[in-house]
Length: 326
Image 1 (cartoon, one colour):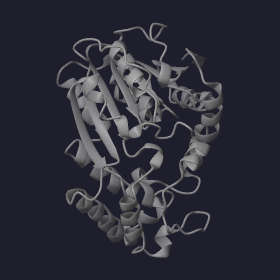
Image 2 (cartoon, rainbow, N blue to C red):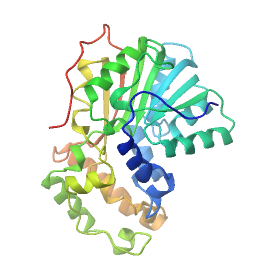
Image 3 (spheres, rainbow, N blue to C red):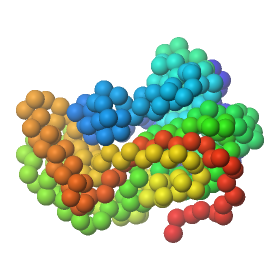
């Protein structure tokens, strides 16, 4: 396994900030667990994406790939790999022979590489690179050389989505595959007042024991964070998330979108999901999940998360102009 190597232009100021925010994977759960840590929530997401509680979105994707071509794929690219969970699952399942994984945080890349090495996984190569300016043409980013490109909880951090999508189209082999599992809600978490109201109405119905963080404080009175508060933690956080889905048809073919909610549960369960893990909390969790689903059916909530499966474009898209958030 190669040492982590920087490739292309690196925004070192942003990279340093990402080292602080995301460099230690355990920091994300220091105050408590999150919605997708709960098996009931994961099963519900699986049903919305794959149609089966036991089939995860990633497995759904590779089942679709296997229906058209034999596995393992020769080469896949993982965008914003973080601590490496995604590529390790791909390697363990035998879905790809070679995996190239990138992230802008050198600190978290070292964590990912060490874990892959500890598990004895071969064929994973890590590089420090920026999704906003992939080093296309510089090995291993050879045009047409990847059978699939995947982004999980990462592409919503990209400010230059149009250029990223174009580069992915260039990197994919003919008939190549693109998979996303992403936050697609409002940019920089600027949720509408109506969504915050629904969140608080449901939170007020819950007993204090379920809304208490590990530090003893109780989560109440949810509010929308200011843009400045979001930027202070991570300047790339959800920078263009609302444009992630609308831009896809301009750069890919056979786009399938499977929304799976999260507009309430993502915020409400952040840091307190562990309180819903025991049997006494099960009725509350089921009620919250049912309430969120009913709000979607009634058209009163947007889906904040979605999975996407798409194919490489029939022809290379025209070079886009610089794409920046308003």
